[in-house]
Image (cartoon, rainbow, N blue to C red; front, side):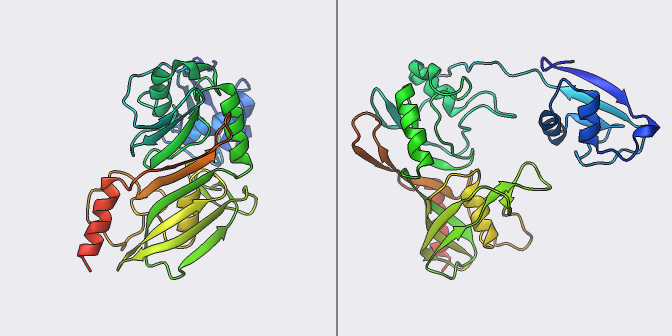
Length: 312
């Protein structure tokens, strides 16, 4: 069996009792890496006697393990003529305002309707910039986060922008509405972020994670939420969401990091996270001029804040 897809059913001999599922599969399906097998387990493509196990499950012997490998995604991305909100464009860069609900690039469960496919249709020259499935992508926003992104249209722009991001010279400011009344008027969260040790779909503050720094300032407090200005100094996956949740103030509308019984209900349909990439600034890759962009608060978040103000 290969990455082209297929299903294999294996029987666990009694002699293998006590072995972790992911290690056992790695030994019996050597054509796939352990990391790939763990991802398939996390995605529910591995079953033991019909049940969906965790990668850490210890085998008892005598079970039947079914392994399904979905067909590999195409190596290249097909352009899709999806409307874009373009704030700036020249021969080198493209700055767009992404709506909540749009995925930046293809991934598990999201093969079409992505920002990358829309940009490829808008600017076909990006096909040779960056990875074949992520043309022009130099940084991301989560699916349910809205706001500003810069895309590279040329290789030299891609190299320049990724270097600026690595050097932390790109300015990225967000508006975030979080649960609870944040006590300090401003603060800094300097805490490493890595994959959650027990849930592969989540990130977490972990000792051996990558350094992550988030600065925040309270703009307005309400009975049960706070409106924040947030500045990223690093760009880790789910950084604002993880850091604010670690303070006990998860982003409103976040089911992954904010679900907790007893929280005050959101008074309006938010249609995403109460998180918006509001400001973006960087050095132009060719002219070396400083470019700054701002995106107004989207109506979905503005309505949310209006409801909280009216409830005072």
